[in-house]
Image 1 (cartoon, rainbow, N blue to C red):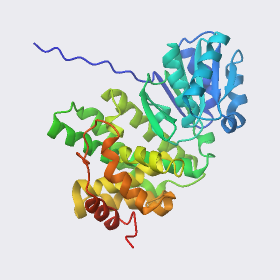
Image 2 (cartoon, helix red, strand yellow; image 1 turned 180 degrees about the vertical axis):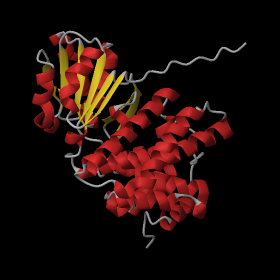
Image 3 (cartoon, rainbow, N blue to C red; image 1 turned 90 degrees about the horizontal axis):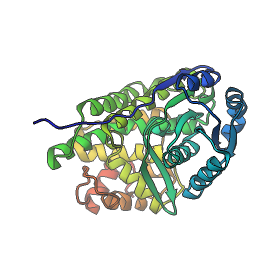
Length: 351
């Protein structure tokens, strides 16, 4: 008897485009959210769009978070309880939205995501990533009820944040390869739909990277749609598998070895070059991934990440220890194999 079932949680409203922050109130009304919200934001997003958001929700309160931490999450929870907030609005990049997502999960209330930068797919997904010391915790949470992504605002974000978001999406290519590998070798549950959606999104950015340029709202539109697709793929899968494989383990290990040196998206981009080579060697698409990253001014070498060659080798040979998730790294990559991979791909110079 067939007994398989699944529960897919997706954003109910996704509003993307020029000036749509002024449609936030309508999006909230359409969700039948009532009462007083608490806006969670950080200083720069608050300056950019805080007043426009508060105009749409005049009964709201605002809390400014400076750092992404569990302490900040606790402060948001305490403030929401003190203010008797009925739902939360996350305004900003990854930091305030991840904090708001985890707080909403703890409070068991709704969340509306209003991203101001296309830095990673956390603006849509049901995952939150919060650093603690030299480690980073990825935690499951419900996805936002709605996403209101104003491309006019997002196009003005620092280019490095947009390029990091692009690199994060491009890395989905190797994440899906790892997922399929885990299906074949470990019988890990695999979703053809989620895998195809994530892979298609990554290939779209690889193939069209030369059309993504700074300060172009059309570029922000392309990147936001890709981030939405990636987040939806994770919701369909019920895990981060469609967007997180060995390249993310590599990045998480870099967070421990060389904390704060590079953006998450940039680290997973370089990790994707390395892991694609491990998958397919000289005949793989690692050159296409590298060239796409170069086209959007994302780092492709250790030096461009601001880390040493030794850091790359240490991260690549120890990344399998991060979590119990089968990837191309298997039970570990030898130092010789890591050195060959990093030098052939040009991630380190090998001198």
